[in-house]
Amino acid sequence: HGWYIPTAALRDGWSLSNAKEECESLKREFRLGRLEMIDVEYVQGDALKAALEDLVHVDVIYAEMGNTYNLQHHLCSSVGNKLIHDAMLKGAIYVGSSAGTIVAGRTIQTVFWKNWDLPPASVCHVNWRDPEVACGLDLAGGRSFLPHAVGEYASKQWQDTRATETGHDGHEVIALADGEG
Image (cartoon, rainbow, N blue to C red; front, side, top):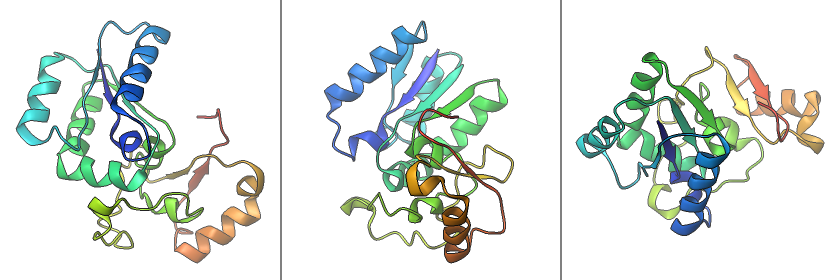
């Protein structure tokens, strides 16, 4: 059984219909018996716990691409971040696509490196420069992630410069080209 998290995509131009289609496509492609789309922006706290309990056992968690800030904010406010850790302690694997990859790291502040995402109005009041607020799921032993490391973003010199400029030179940042990971 799997938990599909569309939260980032739904604040990045995807319709609910697009997210449902992608969920069904992943279910077919990976032959998952059950893949439930649960948006942590709207399903939170006890309701989120109950939705995951209804799955009985979570084997895979797939966090979709889209707006990193929206995903991060709602993972924290919904207790989704804790429930992801709980599921992984029971053997679930985590798969992130773009924003879903960034939030898996030690910090989501690598999103500053390229300035591709802007916080949606619902979370623009949040101080994303605060390391506590921007603390990711930390699923990679203290490392962070930089997806889409292609073109100029693949340059080690560019990465090192951005790491220094943004204060992320104290830990490893794993750069992933499209299709890697």
